[in-house]
Length: 602
Image (cartoon, rainbow, N blue to C red; front, side):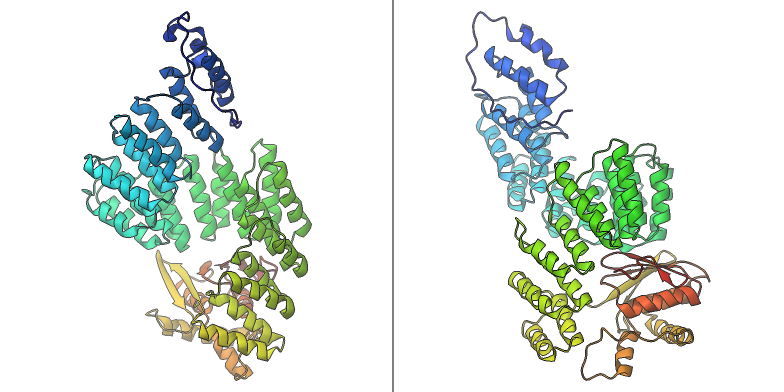
């Protein structure tokens, strides 16, 4: 289906000419079944208007259907709305439902969908369940909670709210609009036997970063004997990815095969994403290579997977292969390529690909700008990165400035760091990490007075640093460890193992890297102690205690891994003959035989 934009405004309705044959017999309409593209249909529409047939039911139905289909863009939806608005008294509920379905597929303003619905009521056309399903989906797509609540109230008034199709749509609408409580209330009113309702709740839990709740719902669904759909397993795989729960993800993969969903492209794409985010790039590659057919999303997810694991050249090679296969890249594809270049130090290649986005008609977003900022800043081109952000046509977000601030810390540029820090505070002064990075930068370069000022400012504003948390999956159970505390029931065992590991590592030259511990009152020994029980060290030690010799350890951390833990992990991989895959806030690190896949470029 052609997606060429329709820029023409539909002509005003003309009175039918009496000499014309009856509409159903008119030769113009005989071409209707052959119109498979929007462009062809627009040309036929022009001819129909001249023939006085602009309001013919068959023509209007066909126009609305093609202009609101999955391949249609915003311009097509606007064209459909104009066609619809020029029909004097539309009385076909199908027309209203088709237009509402178009709004449901876009993120357009929910008020536009509401106006269509209000006209339906004004014209005396009775809404049906399909009307409410599309209206509620439109509210969900636009994150329009208030309009969604009003639609819910009217559905209750007209007796449609309890319908099997409407109720799960209500659950999804509330979940998409961030009202988890209302979604749970609606779910509680179901009889528990609706797969669609479970899908809505599981997806809502995943979107709200509550993967544990999603898995509990999935198990509950299985216990009731409900057969999952592709929508179910895609959400469950996303939950596994959020947890970094590889073994659970592998179990879901086996389950998917048993219920016959393994060949679906969307499910395979979710499997690639899950395996990559759980640290098993090999499994992700195996799924990708085993796919009989691949869509653009599958290619893009695999490129992003290579990028996040530090395999920049492989990501670029796959991108080029994708283009050779005739697959057109989108914004996500380019994001993966830019990630790859950023994480691998491929500066010139990254800048070239960024420029290539224009040739593909893709407008860069904040994440693309962030990759370019990171690309320049990591390579030491800090002033160029500052200029790049400062001269953007859009207003920079705090994330862009934070990327540069982190690089200033790594390169020891306190003067530029101060300028960047001030720019961040203008936009958001509540993020504890910003204060920590800049105060550490000041301490590392001897700007003690500035460091004290920043820490005082942090205290006055009540900003706190996010505690480090690392998790490791063992025997299908995810164990979480927090830096320095004893929340885990076996934290003392983990601490004792950390002590033993460090003693062994010292025999091969391990020395705590205290270069990033900036406390004037601490001596070197106290600084080393402050590093000793970081969350990733506890998770690795717990893994050594509770897995077979030689088993791979997979750790997920909520923050960027510190230099000392990075050095320790390299030595553990060598001394204990373990492969360690650590996923931090920015990327994956594969530690093996004393070497990290990042090449210490992170």
